[in-house]
Length: 171
View 1 (tube, rainbow, N blue to C red):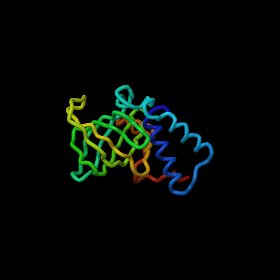
View 2: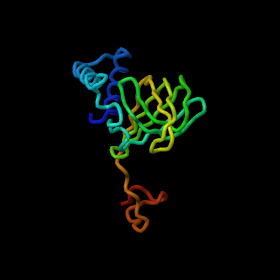
View 3: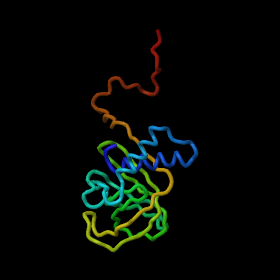
View 4: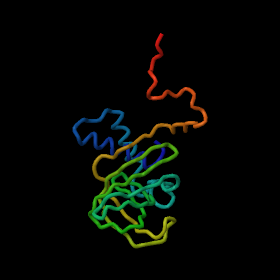
């Protein structure tokens, strides 16, 4: 686990497993305690401008009453909350989905959250935006995408079988 988002995902996943009554192994309990230790308020390296969350990750907000689909910028991560900047005003109490894509690792994290608060509008790299605090609810989802498939060469059609050809040659 190297990024704050991975740690938040792992923590939320393990706590969800615990809440369903499945229980945790001793290794999983130790992992939860270690993650909680990293996110101690005031000493967390995953809060503020130096958190490094916005570097290579793209985030998209989806849902809400107005069915939004907008880009967002991650600002800080906590175990039960995510802070982000969004160009769209979000009403407190609305439930939305946050999809965070890591193109380098080909991962997509999906979190469901309830808007706790929306701050004043400020200028950001994605335009003007509101500081939004999301309270995470439910279990997160991690989508792993496989390696990019090579593009077929239209010049080289050797080895391709037409649909009308039999799969096995007659003897």
